[in-house]
Image 1: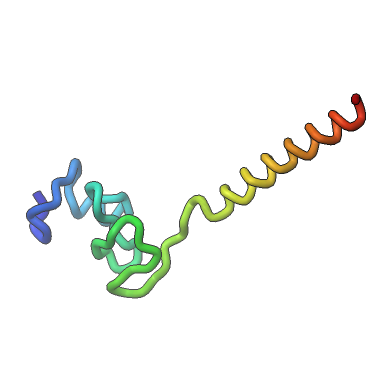
Image 2 (image 1 turned 90 degrees about the vertical axis):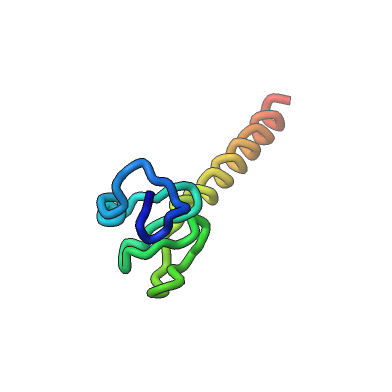
Length: 82
């Protein structure tokens, strides 16, 4: 159990997880700048105000562009063949 939050169950020591920047439990993440707990879905730290970088920021537009390119190639192929 965590001394700061007795309701939060962790799989590794809290200090180790804080210093490595790992997520703690299911409901909280540790801010890499101030090492305070924040909700996992938060975009900003409520303690120091630093922003968290979302890993999907660039991946979603790339996936959409690949999908649209595949549709365009399929239509072009159908027009050229048919």
